[in-house]
Structures are given as structure tokens and as C-alpha cells.
Image (cartoon, rainbow, N blue to C red; front, side, top):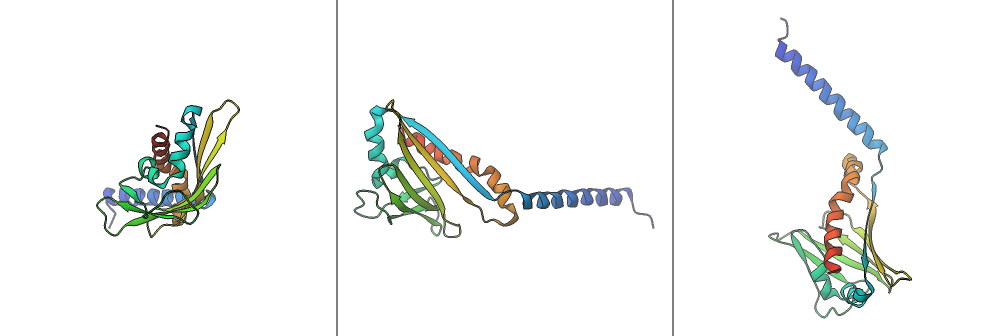
Length: 178
């Protein structure tokens, strides 16, 4: 019995789809799974003291740190950022999904912290670096870099990580520079 035209077309379509999937997997093996997301904001000298206050005060992080569909919960008595401090991320409408921010190091020129969006993800290292130019302008640089661990999808996610996390960083920096 001869196959019908519909069956021949279906075979042709499934073979093309299989080739596309195999090519995507093969290309994924050669793409890097690491990423680097970097955003900068320039702060005028008039706002430098306010920037320092907002960066080094945990209570101020509640105002400027943008967490999509969530918020930070500070521990009682937090007056200044210190290495080892841990802050909880609570998501709106979620009772079981929680994340955390852990302060790794604090200096006058940088804050290193690790964000773990939820219990099932790897911690993501973040750096906030402050540099002041001769003209009195202060440059605040936020850098996130790491390696994704999502199987063969990691290289493809790394390609769009800049767009995914970049918008959250931009919102936070805009809030910080208000």
C-alpha cells in the first residue's frame, strides 16, 4: 500500500524538525555557558552622600533594590551592611518560594553580595563598585557574572541573561540614583 500525500508530508516535516533540534544541540555544545552582566550609572557630586547612605544602609535597600514580584525582609536591628549579613527575599503570593541575599564583603569602594533567587538555584555573585573621577562624578558599576547550570540550555540562557537580569539591575540603579 502506497503512503498518502499527508503521511509523506508528515515524514518530511518531522525529519526537518529532527535536524533542527540536532543542530541546536550541537551548536549548544560550542557556546559558552558563562555570562557577564554589567550596568553603570553616573552620580553627581551633589548626590554622593545620599548614594553612600543608600548603599550602606540595609533599610535603604528596601527602597532601591528591585526584586520582581517580591521584596526584601531585613533582620531586626540592621544598621549598616556587614559581611555575613543575610536578608530574605519573599515573593508576593508565594508561601514556599524564598530567596536570599548574603553580603560577602563591604568596603568603601565596593560591596560584594550573593543573590540566591530561590532554594533551587545556584547563588549568583554580584559586585557594586564605586569609583570617583577627578571631575567629582561618581561611577557606580554593578556586575553580575557566573556560569549557568541548566543543562544543554545553559549556553542559550547565557545569551539572553543580559536582557533578563539587565532590566532588573537598571531599575535598581535608577531607584538608587533618584
